[in-house]
Image (tube, rainbow, N blue to C red; front, side):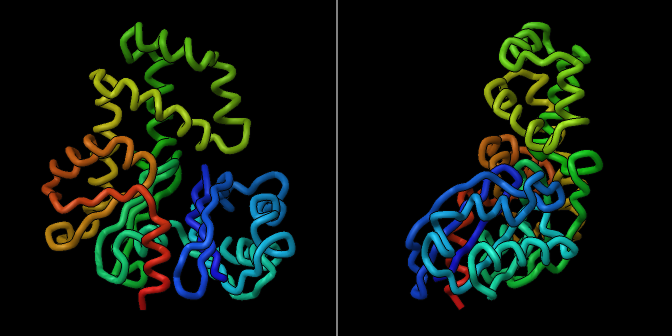
Length: 283
């Protein structure tokens, strides 16, 4: 049995696949980002997620392919060791969510792959590996167009009264945030990126408001201009693919932003798991 994971900071989607490539079961757990490790540790966290599904309490797993947010080379070993222990197998491969997105969306063909979720990222993909990439830099220094940055922009505009008064009141009626509570959530409590990204639904619900649409469009424009367009000339000849909750929920705005740069061959994929299963069983 093979365990394949599409791991985000907010949630992880898992698939157990038999040796014929048939999905036996799928399940969803809370997310993980090893750059922002949970207080109980990565292994304990994964053990809690997978208990009852794999290992001593579930099916026997022969191989694990984990593609995860925050899985940079210097932390992949920690995640690999944790999965080896929890899944009870030594055939474990951990790679970035960016490579997972590229393999899921582009398969074994070249293309530009982009992730717009809690964070954001992009790469030029050669059909097997990442050929070039622009560093995401996280929601403080980068992550343009991500849920975390959209949420950051929203709360800043609300508290600095840059949005219509009625909209600011509606925001406060829903979230009941004081300045001190906001500062605590962002600067003192763990996983501020998840908290900020959790505000993105408010943007989606009010997308017809000029101030809200301006936030979304400016961030998508910044994402494409500062990331995708770094892959000189490829956008004219290669497909540009997007995945992630923000890409899916703001698809019209994302398409419009892409068209502004002359990118017309755009594909938005909501579910990466089928593509990852196909990649690993379509040699």
